[in-house]
Image (cartoon, rainbow, N blue to C red; front, side, top):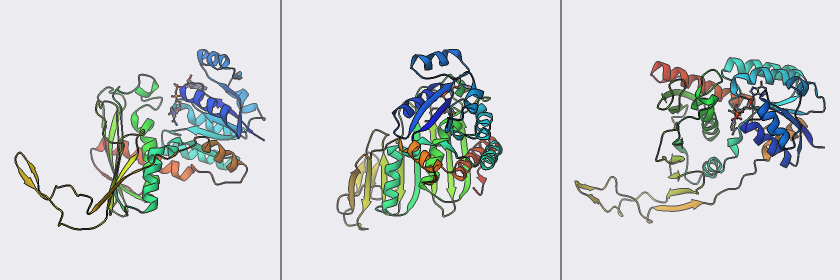
Length: 348
Ligand code: NAD
């Protein structure tokens, strides 16, 4: 039988969840509630049942899953009340504004015995999956460094995201996705965090940031979000022991250059106006194999399929609470590093 889902908050993301659930093969939509009348009217106009208030959702025993899709500062109350009323709960990212807040939510989940997870949907992004696949295949050897960037050009959105109290800013909005992906790509202890925030279009919260992560084995990562970049840097750049990967943006295929031999016979010095260089001369096909990775396909409905199977005890939940906690810990370290203007030694 399909699981019944109620969505709290019918804004951009709440409406997206409703749409997904309506198309799902494992869930059906019970309804939604939003504190703003205009959004309740929009839901009704879309043929969606609108509850009287959030309490009516908590009281509805026919509901299996509550999805919390409100701004970040009200997640905790809604998640805890959802769990206490005996429902499984999915909370939008970032689940909490601090690790402390998150731990209170996890305690409520433990007490309820219900499934609680975060909507880290960007684990299904095909660009990220291409990088993961190349690492997993071992075709270009062990990772040395990964750089992950998202660049927009319109500044920080002018909604709640540009204010501190509701949990705005790009570390919390996009950083949460990119850091989560990076910890999946390099599954090691984080030992160092250096973060510099930008405030080009907004003084109250970060409208972008540049983050350096050090990992236990010496691997390093760069995570960057910009909202004032009129030419975007590549989405991914990865250096491995036996090759490199380059991915321009999420519409494109990943390009791989694989070292096939270590040989200096083919070096032709490169001439430029001021002189020649052999060190920076590009390799050719004698020692380098270059190819594109076919774009992968990804089915976002897998998120709800996995959730329903986990509720039935038939699968392990993909987005696990300790993983969500680590991402929150890194984000806390980002704010602290930016404040202190220095690299923080951490054990995350
Ligand atoms: P939004 O402003 O478009 O919508 C939020 C809605 O929540 C508003 O309509 C607001 O009236 C309503 N709301 C606020 N408090 C409420 C309450 N107590 N009870 C019921 N409704 C309430 O914001 P959004 O872009 O939809 O973001 C919502 C959440 O989704 C945020 O946590 C955001 O980070 C997340 N989000 C996730 C993704 C993703 O890809 N995973 C994408 C966008 C947003």
